[in-house]
Length: 314
Image 1: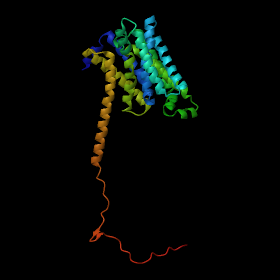
Image 2: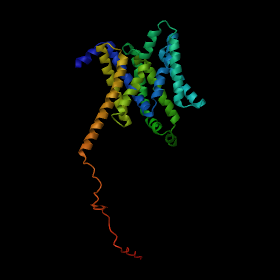
Image 3: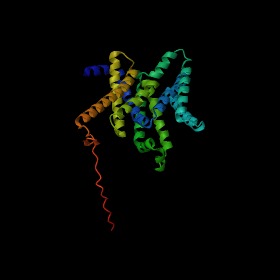
């Protein structure tokens, strides 16, 4: 059993891919906990796809695609805020509009190239076994920055997640906290797309923290459990991909999502079994007291004809 795992990571290529995957899982799980708690999954999905136009333009112009992804993510966040403020529409509406628009623009730009199919596949699904040493260094730097941000801004993020108005009353700035959270989210997505692609990074962003919420309740425990589950999905996914010759990044994301449904089924089964044991151990509820029945029907108390004694007043 051990050799089944060690054989998959015997080469330098797979070892570098494993390190990159572990860094991606840790980074996305840390910020993904707040995405799950605040219900920002749609925002995360939109940002993961909204960086595609910047990546495509940077690729065509010969610029570092990371810079293009950062610019595209910044424009995405600014566009959502602009639509929300000026059009008086809900934030979800702005996210949906820009999500579709940016994705379509990115595909249009890439389609101008002769290698359209290959480039689009690389951008969307990544190549975790093709990451370079510089990519790993970038992932490590962004991971350290995200960890510092999550720890340092824990209280503002916590207040923002539960009560925005109360955060204002406590003298905090929820607007700045929200902007910082989106900035960390954008950095995580931009640094991870080379390894797992813009499409599959969303799976690692949401699935491990969502699975952790089924197991533990406290936020620090959810973060720790999410990082653990994310790293486990990387190890198992890369091993399965190596032995079965499947797409590495897609297999990793699939394992992460499968963890959620396994945990959900196990929790529901355990809850149902505990409820069944409780009902079986509890005595049956006592029924109402029996009413004596006479020949003419239920017995009634006869009136003696005497008046009730007067109430003595003091």
